[in-house]
Image (tube, rainbow over the protein chains, first blue to last red):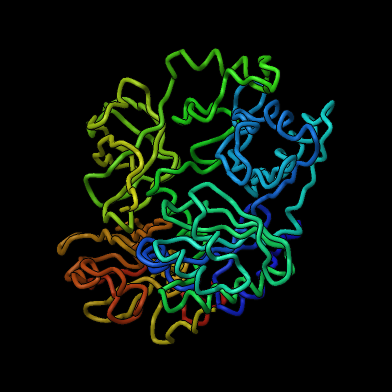
Length: 379
Length: 124
């Protein structure tokens, strides 16, 4: 299979990035050091190329009604120039993907999906669009997505100026978005991200991507901004307790299992006050009030060895302690200095403070249950 | 990507290096260190431990992943690089120097590659 290249590929090569195959793309894993990039995002700023993400535009008079019927959240309740985290599920309630939906203009929404789920999300939206007056356009290949994340993100964007409406960009609230002109191209900037820090995400036509990237890199350098790769992105989102599809979320998981039941709006109503059905509603309604078989928890390691994706969670360090769950993501936390992990465990052992263990390559390492996220940015 | 492996060392296919001597010195190659990313934790055998060529004798852990350490030799551990244990970044910054891991009194060696063979192995 031919691997897809980001519109910023040449920039990464010029920067000497270590590239990695990811969901059919070749993307930067790191530029210099995972730790340095992670720390820069926590203390200054990082610049990410997220052009592998899928961008799907939904246009038409029925756009809101269609998304209400296709997704678990209520798109029709997303204010103009606001964004919302939501999910698309199968009829059985299993998660097809987690999404961010931007309400970019009246009758137009931008749906952002994971690269690995590009095909199933596009297929689900197209299939579910039958009977609605909407157009579903896959704009993924034509779009570059560049994110500035970190406490100095606003300083970086301000310095990158000058064709951006800076007063409006500064006034952007978290999970709001704004149409802007970048390098002469119509673009969208959202105050969104996946790192647990303040930040901005720029959706620009592919042709404008390299110039924007270079501009942000140069403007951001005095503030400590560095380019950051997928490795840092993963450790940042883990500390922030954010799910990653394929780890915490998959087709066998409902939003409730992942502790994200809040994104499901079971009782949606249309403009006429009539109840609105959506794909997966019946299955999710049945799950909403039942005791889940497993619960997503945070685990902190008491030792040094980190739990990793797929490792068994056991009831204790004793050899005969039974298995009570599975680790979904884990790493030594660069910010906190100790191992952290997310895991699905049985509800009986999910209470904060519960002492468990993880089988780390044949040796049981003690851990305890903590609330998510592991890291919350200081305000 | 990586520089040529030092010619005076011997290598395992699992990316450990061995500097023959009495005692011999063991470390991991720059190829292994680069693949792991920033190393944050080393788990090494203790002084006095008997180790066996080809067996797992420790772990090298980065933020991104973890790799087992395979012994290139059979013998007794006589010294552990405490500086690298305290600051595993040394293994990234100087894998063939300050980032060495163990010194071992060797009784037998496992299957080892020359620098040339190792370079061919890693470029394959």
